[in-house]
Length: 456
Image 1 (cartoon, rainbow, N blue to C red):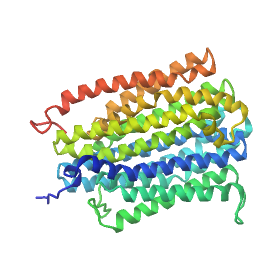
Image 2: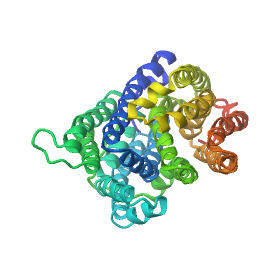
Image 3: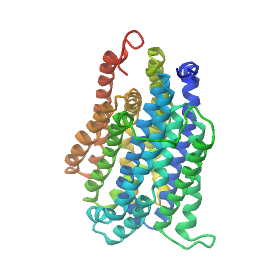
Image 4: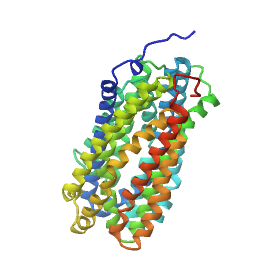
């Protein structure tokens, strides 16, 4: 019989637990956001075409991150649920599978980096300089992507146990190294050759690899609730299925964001490449607001998954309520910044007068959806944490494919400024649907949790 150990996720005071687990993740996500802005800041100093090239590369990078994060979310959900059910060996097995899956994901995207990058950029723009810069940047990022795939799986595994400090250190380490190396490799400082836009890619992958080695050291040479071991390892179809029952919908859900980004870029480039740069600037800036909220979900998901697995309805519902309140407050503060000082934010990227003219109304209009998005993000994290990733996928597809893209296309026929209204309209509808789906989930899965047999 497996030894049953008390876990803080089932016993500690809830608000304090959520904050203690979320704040490290929020901090690391803020650092990641700062890295994104700093990276783009230095690239923008090369030229507006260089900034546009990086903006056009974003959908492919997002697709890569989507596969990595989707797999990691599946691992996190499965490990936390198995711990809540006191099934230690199954939790260990899921974590070990996650480590191996990281290498498989890397090999897939390395192949895409060799063969698919040039056709991708030729389909996005006819400007040869942007094509050349984009291919140089994205090829390096994809071929040498091993760091991000291994690190994210190990990070989510530790977060599933309630350990948020080492994931925070890992993400911070990678981002700080990246920020330090960016100007060195881009502009050729300290005796290093001047690589230009390729230097930004080199700095990125070095930071990711350093973070990966840190997580490998922590996970394999330090004691944790979870034990990852390759000795006698065999793939189990049931474990893979359980990981991707949540992971695949999360993967597709995040990949939809890549499709949205590419689709919006194609709509905007029909006006001018500067419009693409505006959306690229917005996308970097909004990460300051959204990333901390995603950090909050990193702390919430293992708590919700554990208490769902343990049949503790009261703690699960309380975690949802607390998470929603915190997320709404954070998003409201972010929206205020976008509404009040959009020009100041855009000037971080060496914004030209034309970019400012397009960008100021864009930031103000798009930011109207932030508060509605907060509720959707927390409810999506709930669905993932209790093994209902398909519901998150449905809401994400509704928001980004069924509503935003078609609506943005139709509104583009009226004028560029109207394209931005597709975002708040879609988010209001998606938020309403999220609440309705939650009500259904409560009535069918949560209402009698802990009082009668529930399939978990």
